[in-house]
Image (cartoon, rainbow, N blue to C red; front, side, top):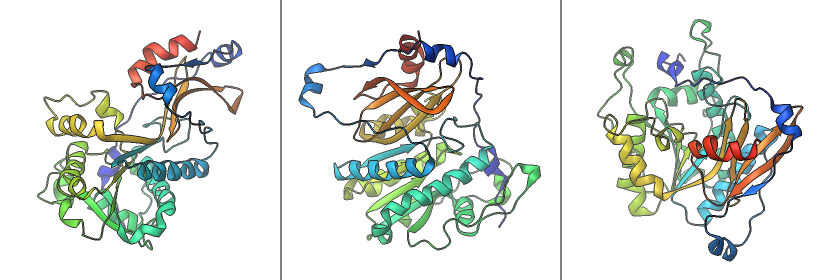
Length: 321
C-alpha cells in the first residue's frame, strides 16, 4: 500500500549540537523545587516522582498507567506527548514520515494497556490515508525518504476512524479540506476516543478534535486521549490566532480542561535538559550525565506545568550555572 507523499512533509525543527555538558554536570546543579502556592502544596499528598524511562517499552508502560490514573481521577481531555525518534531527541530530528510511522507503532503498544475496553474505544488517525497505512502498511520509497512499514492495525479489535478525508488528486496540490464529518463515526457504544498525532494538518485535524469534544464527548462525559499531538506548538503561539482561528479556539477552550498525563520534551544546546511528567507525579526538569545516558538527575520540580519559554529563559539558566 502506497501512502500519499504528504506524510513525508511533517514539520521539522532545527536542533543544536550538545556542548559543554560534561563541565556543567561536574558542577552538579542544585535541586530547585518550585512552590507557587505553599499552602496548597502542603495540603496535597506528595506524589513519588516516576523515574525517567530507559527504553520505549518502559515509557509506554508508564504512559499506560499515567493515562489510566488520569481517567480514574475524572480527566476528560488527556495528553500523551513524547519524542518518537529516541527518548533524548526532539520532534524533527527524524524524517517526518518515519516519525509518524514510529508514533503509529508506539500507539499500538500503548493501546495494549486498554485491550479490555477495545470494543468501546475508537482510535482516530489524522486522515483516511494514514488509516489505510495503519491497516495495510506501506512499501519503501528511498526517493521520498520513506521506509517500509508492516501493518500495525490489521488485526486489532479497537474501533478505527479518521479525522479528515483526503483526496489523492487534490492533496498533491496542497488542498486537504473536505466536507467529511468525523463526528458521524462515533457510535453510541464508544466510551473512549483516542486521537493519533493530529499534527500534520493541525488546522483541520485539531478542528475535528474540537468538534468531537463539543458534539459528542462533552455531553456524554466521554474522555479523549490525544497521542503525540505536538500541542506545544499551540501553547507556544506557533499558529497566530488571526490566521488560525480554529486552532486558537481549540487552545482557548480545551487547554484549560487538559490533563497532561505523560510528557517528555528535550532541550538541546548548551543547557540540555528534559521536562518530564508522569501523572499523578510532579513536573520534573532533568539533566543527564553526558558520559552516562542513564545517569539522570532532577534539578527542578513543580506541581504546575511550566511553559517551554519559561524553562528555556528562566529555569534552565538558574540550574545550569
